[in-house]
Image (cartoon, rainbow, N blue to C red; front, side):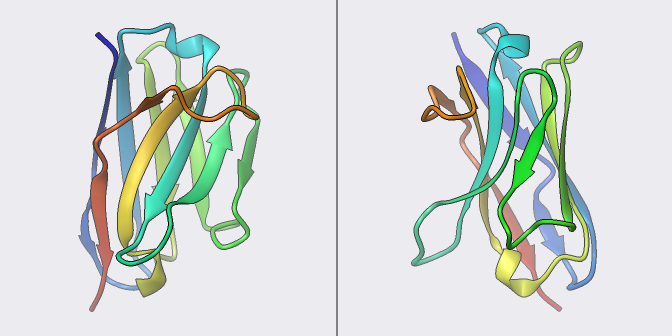
Length: 118
């Protein structure tokens, strides 16, 4: 049974930091590209960033320089480190797994809420 379980969301003040984790099971994690998406209320889902199975990363312009994706294949976990958070980063964040960086996700997590507010 495939599972992607996000954790680490919460309420943080503007300018603060947060690290999300996504624990994977039920598939060969090391062979998948992992993607983080987010969806704010009333908005479409947005791709935040990607990490390939060899560790190459790319980011949306809106988070470039502030967010960092990493993975630990030994722990079957992908991380999203978010620095200098802004109110517009408020959203539900989802991790997903794809067989390649260019393909749509095969698996999704349930999401974790991040709220940036003073």
